[in-house]
Amino acid sequence: MQCYLRTKQSTVKTPMIITVVVVTYNEERDIDACLTSLLNQSRKPNEIIVVDDGSSDNTVKKVTSYPVSVIRVRHTGRCEARNIGWKNAKGDVICFAEADSVFDKDWVFEIEKSFLCGADTVTDRRRYFRPRSFLQKVIDADFIIRYQNYTPFSAWAFKKKVLQATQGYNKYLDQSEEKELHKRVLSKGFKTIFAKKAVQYHKGEPKNFFGFIKRVFDSERKRASGYLILFPDEVDYTKIALFFLNVALFGISIYNSRYVFVFFIFVFLQIVAYFLKIYFVEKGYLIIPLYQSIGLTMLRFLRTFTLVAGFIAGLLDRKGLRVKLLRAIKKTSN
Image (cartoon, rainbow, N blue to C red; front, side, top):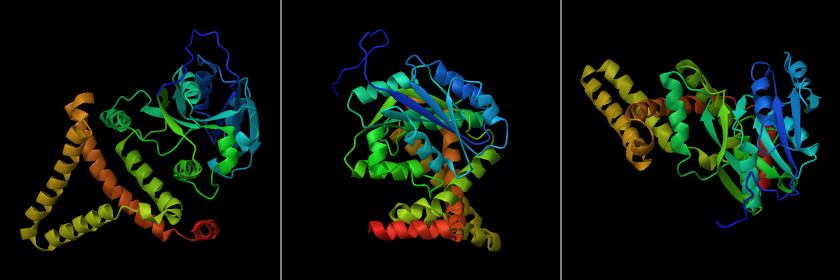
């Protein structure tokens, strides 16, 4: 890809006006680090807007001590808050920043480079913020592998005209809303570029095993009761079939001990398949230590079962006005 890239030392001025929108909801613990990292960017954003989504803690009090614009709204969810943010922005480029992330000093600079290369939307790269425990390092390893040959399925920075053309985020979704928006972005012919060097370090990743299970379960439950209503073709029936096959074999092995060995062999083969995919297909052997590949194997294996459990819970949670509206949207789009 050939394009003009501005360097940090360049005196060439660009007319690009960049607004960073941060949505907060009870983020008093993390907002200081977030805003400090955004204000210390090598390429300063022209504007930072914090949309507080009805926080009940000291978030707003902390935010008002920074040179940023603050918009306070009642608690309606992050999608509506993001839409309020970009609609009130002065910039012709809008970057959405997570309130519980810390941003590399060149985050805005690298995003701007992608727009100068002709991007309409840009997605950045994520890492775990200061991983310490084995689990945290494994989650970070998952990020490292993911972005080696990454095809964007979402975006976090947009030309304002793209948001205007797509009408922004779907306020009826509370999970995978960025993926749903990106589908509409692509359907209108806009171009997304992955800014590999634009890194944000996410502090909101799970700190322990139970936090990991809870996050995966809750995310998939919300996805099943919202996003998958719009895109039922994305349901992974292979994982569901494996889930019930494992449950069936486990149940049979309890009642008949002769099948215990069969059950464990079946589980072992699945784990081996996960490991081979990570280590060889995704080339984990080149970029992460062997012990992290083994840990990531177990993590993905457990995540698969947690995802299916969350999916089933989400199916049972398909009720209420929000679901009816999503079904109406789906029917209209067909």
